[in-house]
Length: 309
Image (cartoon, rainbow, N blue to C red; front, side, top):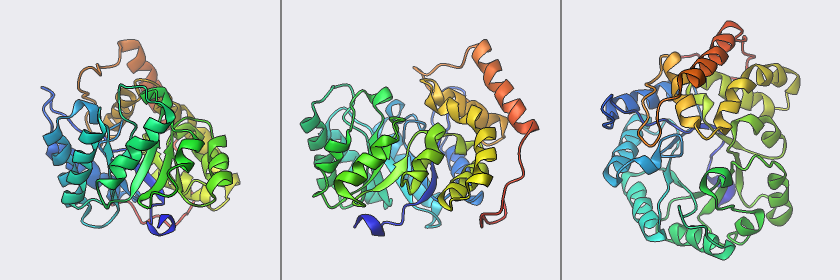
């Protein structure tokens, strides 16, 4: 069950690429995915927040899932985000993910409606029953308004396919609370970039990362150092990375991450409305952070990463 899914390490929340006219660019999206795998990431999350899930049509979500399956070719696990207004719609997309042959789904609370705790739990339980795929419960109360508390998660412990918990609340105490309630029942994932080392110290086995889209090798190295307890080596890298990692905690994180990705030559910075381009001032600020990061980019300690392709 939870201990046998093999999800660990850095899973970038892959950006969905668009053309200048906002049409889906599936070829560019596939290229982004392949570049991340070639640089050594442990898995991919498609159609997440950073993948602009809620800006995609149902057919586009399926197209992105199919592209990910084709690109990964079994090299890394691929998990699809499920973000819908109703449990019924979420179940439909979950069944599509299973049909495509993905390795799991990351389920967000039902959007828009501010559900009560028992309703939140029922949503996850309903989606989990719609498919045999392993389920990662995704908690991001700043963005999605519904808080999946440790108590709600613990109430799902009897649901066999719910195997993992990604927390983007920023409150790392929740990892300890979950373990105190249900031990190692769920594989814990850090969901907010700028608390990743703390999350690993408290038991996170994986990291759904935004900024690893731009710096996949730095992200995977940082995670592996923290996992190995090599904190003396991890902390200088973490300090270098932190101004970039803070961008993942902003409301406009997608625009910021895509801009960084573009600067690194890995993708486009086009986002679909309602996400508009950063203002000139915001763009300049992000470019300044990137400029300093690239001027001071550290040599990475050896952690067993294969050479960059």
